[in-house]
Length: 565
Image (cartoon, rainbow, N blue to C red; front, side):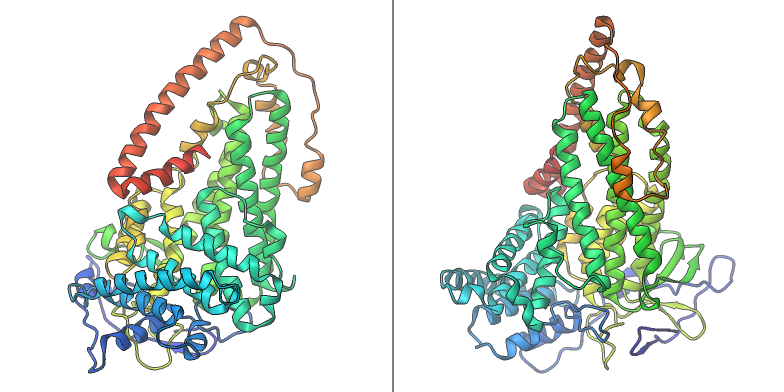
């Protein structure tokens, strides 16, 4: 039995046996039974049912000062709002949409009502934004966040990018409100929510944090959430810089030294993540709750738990923060490999020590993200050590608002599962299982965006590495024929070294002058690059066609941007 610090969670045991007749650690729970689970219909208006459903499933109130909430500012704000205000309308729209998307209520005609309320809320918010007083109010920021969340719930192939436009708007309002918004509890909660959404947006688009790292990292240095957020923002900043350099730098000795410095920065940040991981307090530590060796029924796409470890956390916010750190470490591992590949081109980057070390990190991060899924989807251990599922029907009784199988857990998993599934370091079985979980989050928990982005066929960083190596060959680069930097400078700088990031950067100064290559060698190299570029363009166009067939035109644009920025 696990405790989250406030309450104990347990589910009635359900015995199950494996193929050999032995008791399995996992209780079987087919997805059909989940889809057919029926929420009790109360003799109250559907609008009130929707409001209760949304609060129960998507509002998380922290019961510990080291944790954070999610949408916990909504209830106090709505209590003071008029029924026809832009916040009340936006809340009604997203609440009705969340209820309409559940299996037990689909086909009841609720979604058209939700869309009508969404349209009304958009008009009301546009009017509020024209008022200098209303545009800075808490209710206006909260309304825009709700409309962004509406897109997450209802996202279809044609509007997968609409969520980002709402987050852009919320960021602009946060900027206008300034630091004085942090003086109130509600203002601070809105700031943190917008910051989290902004981080996901810039990471997915390979852009630097809007307004910079320091503007968003405002909490006390002792705040665990603030420490990790600053690191996450710095990763986004570095990723954007490396994307720009590898996409536009010609292959010269000078630029290779700059890329080498950037690689050292990524390595230094990895060390900082390890330091953070080793220094978190007991309440933030990850606990391995179980180990699963087999899948009941043998169908990995429908298995509730992937073979391997199953982790437990104190609450869902802490689990979400750990997954954000894992995503960033996946990105850092990819950045190191990309830099090594760019410097060592045209040699095979998979022979470098950086690739070997980054691959180990990537494998671990994918496994850790997967191990967090059962917890975030409501699974816990009972008194007998049996792993039990939560109730995915949506309504739960009592005060178990933290540990119940809230749809918020599925929302927190969408981005981590997408990143893990796109990683070169995920196995085919892991990718199949991840796709199954994304379908469950969409079909059962009601968030369409999960299935939309889960259908993207992307492999990172290998796909981007091919793009990176399409640069211009400069006559001064003897590196391409003599491997002067490829096998000397890179091997001298392994990933794990007991020095600070600043020392690593300081030591990455040019140490030798490279000689001129022969004209014949350059012609051969240039011909090789032209062939590579043509092959890459063919593959890129094929990828975009596939992406468009799965996720619509906007999905194709998203993948195209990710491979060309």
